[in-house]
Length: 75
Image 1 (cartoon, one colour):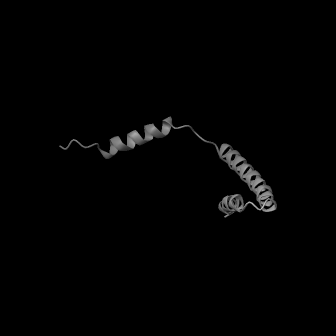
Image 2 (cartoon, helix red, strand yellow; image 1 turned 30 degrees about the vertical axis):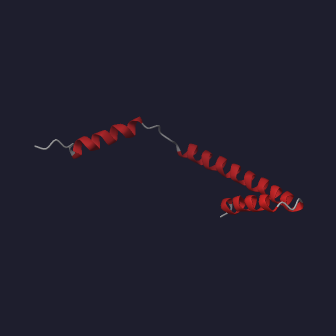
Image 3 (cartoon, rainbow, N blue to C red; image 1 turned 90 degrees about the vertical axis):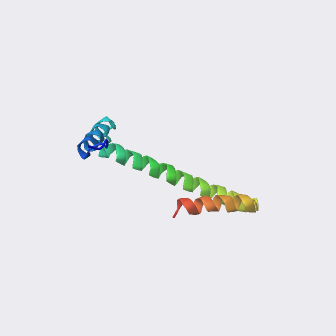
């Protein structure tokens, strides 16, 4: 007989691992999604203001940097 773990042992190990992992409720996932969306929206608003200011100051490097971040976030 070979010295390899059997399918049964692998399945049992996986089941035990899953039991140890914390349970996450749908409410927790939804709450995290809402928080992520709020943070994203706030950053986009902040970037718009900063982009406008960089244009007013004619700061090309800052404008390009901020506008690239804005593009990445609003894809």
